[in-house]
Length: 452
Image 1 (cartoon, rainbow, N blue to C red):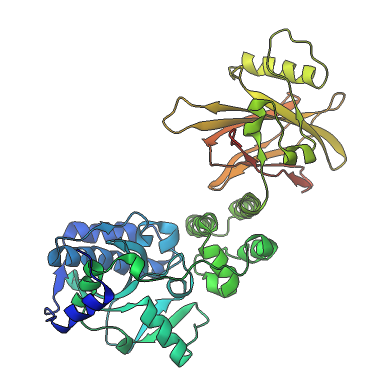
Image 2 (image 1 turned 90 degrees about the vertical axis):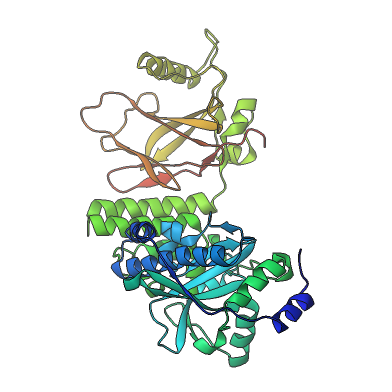
């Protein structure tokens, strides 16, 4: 049975709080917390992640020990996602009976202030219905749920005292702002509907596309796991990064690489290239190669001068560059590369440092897997009468990293490069061609949606 706000208030009048009790954690749970913390590159943040994990496990046991009618959903919980745990020092995106909960783990409550990450206060993606303060005594493997504060109460008090965030993207809140009887939290979670407690809606002032060049410049400085995002970005820039899973994952991977191979020039170059690729994937329109299966070029592909190739029919009358492409396909098939008859392709000519090149792209769907996928086959060749230059580079990336990076060396006699990648229908790929001199051309992303 659900209660109205008035009904819940009446229950509070008759409520007798239970004594605050510690929850003892098993060695297995402590081991899980240790494992989660080891995913974090920075040692200081490792410790906070360890405390956060203990707070999560202890809070879950505390809930289950006080109410049989509780549903916990940790599917999107930040402490279980390394890239989020690495950036936000709180347990956010935990759901209990449909309510968003944010746990603030502290090793001691002797201080009169509580540190709250700005992300869980100002960014709708992470704002909870309730903040819960959890004391973690890690030396005793025990957790105590101490107090809580609703987001509405926090917002009102911040407004009343005009409290602003610190330069390190935190709020320092008085401990007295928190309700000291945590069992009242259970009344809210069981007596209200989540829809009865409003949360802020997303209202991003600056879009990623508008600050793309700024982010590429600033984030390229993030080459040490000891550096914080708040030291190189403004809050407005940071808000965009914190709400972009792809960029958060890039930050996390860079810090891991720096820890395993400090100051590696090759890794630094590759991470910066991948950052540029991610920003293009997130901000640039994509060529929908799925329409090629219907013998169609979308308007964007036409603007980029892509030319659709005919179907792969045996003995079909062809003309150059189609004839050239058919010859390439025949050679690929002889090396074991299978191209189904339903595949469709297109090509476009380009000049790189004054050198004429031709890029072919071929696509087809893969429906035999439980999740439909698509294949993108790329063939980079020289135009007739020319040859590929030594040191020519072909790179293919997606949001997770650089998937392919080929460089033409003196031992390769073929007059073309080829590579293929496979992804789900919601994945995109970005392709770059470069010369040893540093001249590079990056193509708009390739996407696959034959139904559009």
